[in-house]
Length: 356
Image (cartoon, rainbow, N blue to C red):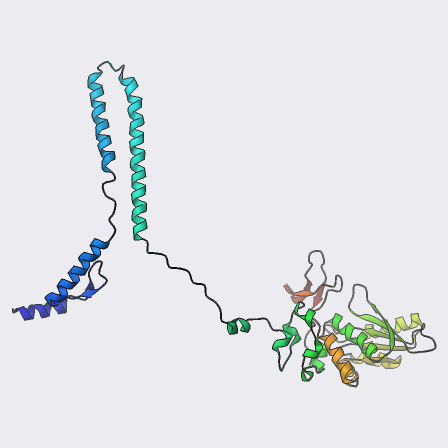
């Protein structure tokens, strides 16, 4: 077989590989100049590599050998063994020093090898986020809503700097869904503020450890000490307001000797409750009627009521016992609202279904 065919077989049989320490690949069958250049680079690389510590164990091996020779000489010199009792402890101490030194030398040698094999550390460069990326992750505020404003996206801390003038007028619109979504404490505040915007003298009394409030109206300018009307404010619950709520108002009117009564809710009434209210001359104000009453107010008054209604977490109910915002919880009977001060406060509220 000719030399040309031999080179061809070698090139087909030998894959491309790397020479140790060069970082460059080569193939068998290349020209002599290329082969000599790569060999020269490999030799230079080996010469430039740091020398490893060698021979660090030789002094200790020599000392161990001399110690053995001394031990044999002592045994031959002292046949009785009296002097050996003095020499042997000294010899044991010498052996301990020898082994201790050998172990230390081996550890130092291992550390030197480890230090040579570690690559040099790269300087750490801190990564800075661009200002536009940081602004995209910022929490929503009143200034980041040029066209729409969703108060539910804000927490209580963000509402401390709330300015209603910063909200576009087009978004401060009263709707029935907004009115029905108000938690009981926000709904009470809206009802009380309604009579303030109407310039009607009133006095509001919150119910103790319960949802709702009672509003006493004073519309007789000649006698402002006697209430002329009584308003029971009751937020909607799981079901529509029924006959018991109407009977409660009738009993309070009889006890206070008040002729006019109003029952306000952001939910709805049952047919039986409406019939009982008509029988006793009580005005039943549900969510639809209250929305119409608010729409008749001037624009500035509607805006003020809207600001009061959407303050803070207006859809999360407040605890009737301690006043703290409640948290969503799940039990064996489904989801419910639980007080965040549990176990000090064990008050719970049912989850309200959406109205049709």
